[in-house]
Amino acid sequence: MNIKVNILMAFILPLVVWSCKTDKLISNKDLAPPLPTQFRDQEEGAKETSIGSIPWRDFFQDPILQVLIDSAIHQNVDMQLAIKNIESSQLMLKQAKANYLPNLQLQIKANSTNPSNNSMNGLSLGQFLGQNHVEDYTASLGLSWEADLWGKIKSQNTAALASYLQTEEAKKAVQTQLISQVAQGYYQLLMLYQLHEIAQQNLRLSDSTLRIVQQQYEVGDISMLAVEQVDAQRLAAASLIPDFEQQIHLQENAIQTLSGRLPQEIKIKEKLANIQLPDHWSAGVPADLLSRRPDVKQAELAVTSSKAYQQYAKARMYPSLVISAEAGINAFKSSNWFNIPASLFGAVAGSITQPIFQRRELKTQYEIAQIDQEKNVIRFKQTVITAVGEVSDALISIEKLKEKQRIILQRTNRLKKAIQHADVLFETGMATYLEVITAQSNMLQSELELAQVKKAELAAVVDLYRSLGGGWNQ
Image (cartoon, rainbow, N blue to C red; front, side):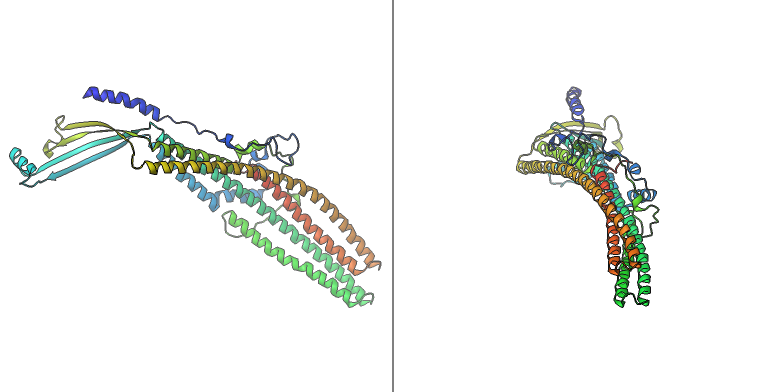
């Protein structure tokens, strides 16, 4: 008996060592579509470190914005759900790793059998034991272990690891998106405050013009029509103020909700025109996205996970080798239960199981796993293409918005001078009130547009930062 056990153990141990080997996750970057050496609309030869590698606290240096972002990271519902998904995936990974270990069960049982007196068992009991029932008491440890001959358990472990890493990347993706949303919402709020200030300045200017027109009407230089039109212009400027105040409150509520807090006022200190993001930045090279963008990494890990599940589905069609052993104490009488070594028993067995009637079902599952793996490869390629496209969109938006901002700034400065000239000419009677109204209206629209373009430029820079994978590192 000992010789057989030794032979069996000599066969089992190498299998245990071989099957418990784990490999690192294989990179799937070779499945990505061919990437260019630089992004479209990127400066020639620009290969400096991507701004996506800059920690968000260094990229956004406004203290109020930093507080809002920090609150969002720790209190936003989507972030909290992402963290819980990571915790759940960690448990699944631990469970998958435990599949390498043998199953060990403790069993304690007692039973009493009373066969029919007219049965063979009943007659035998009465003849040999002098009683019509038999008792049996057993305490044992049972061990079973499946040799991972075809990598089935290893594939499960690889899939679980890839799924866990996917949840990590999903959290990073949520964080990058969240930081981008908070920053853009904050710049939108600064823009609304600036628009509100512009509207108030324009209202004061309209009040001044109205007083001059009323004085000229009183002395008979102009008609009542001029007074009515100038007053209507003043009321149009005044109507913008409550509209902007409403939008400011709604925007504050939206930002606070995004940051996981109840609606309340956000006491800003900076003006939109004073916000400065890093001047010297680079998008790096497209290949950086494969390692920096969380959604790209997540898509790549989905390929790894589906590939591992495909290997698992294939291994299920092959025979399974299970080694089992049981040892303990057994006795027909409870008084003899601990009579050692007489009550000791042990057994070792090995079995090979090959599915036959389930083969069609298992093959179908394997074929579906193949299709799922191919679908994930397609999604990975599309994610990479989308990522490169988003960077290119942000680059061209920044370039053209800067150009547009310069033009509108020149136009605004010219209109400010035009208003000054119009006021002087109107007071001397060399310009009509309609020319004054037109000049004021044009400057108002130009100043409003200038603030909107400045905000759009900041939003484009933030979007570039997000599209390059920036925001998940502190």
